[in-house]
Image 1 (cartoon, rainbow, N blue to C red):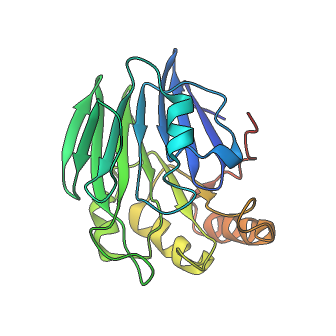
Image 2: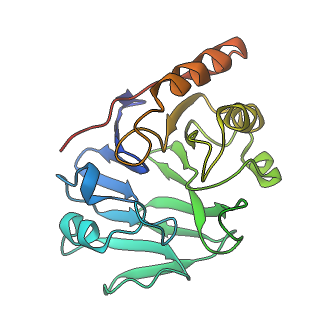
Length: 211
């Protein structure tokens, strides 16, 4: 998907990458959904299967790749920045903000979501979060938000709708559904889009980008 001059990819499950004229930021690359790209900056949300995949990190890594992860994740690479919620760092001119990510399945502090800014465009990749009050701190600070909707380990559709209303991004993309873990979740994505359109929030349904 083209968005404000950037190329945005949903690789499947919780894996996302954004490209800006040869520079790539990737979030939670995962071998089972494809890693046919190289990344300059990799953001890891937490250590669960499907989010932390050491083999996938090795596949997208180059000699200049910088990794950002929470303290709970131990990465065996040289250029690693560990962050906690509330931290804000600059990597290659990309502003990276670690934001809260927690719910009944994930203890607070075990991982983080990310808000990052590339070429003046802000993205929020929520990770495995529930509907949390701290999302209000993102209100009107996000251009494109990736929100999970699968409802077992993250938000349900109704919770994700409430999250989008709190954040008020320009565009919302549902993720964390479909193959390989939640293959029956396609109709929920369409329901999510319809409910956001009723609230005058634009929602794009992206297809998994098979590498």
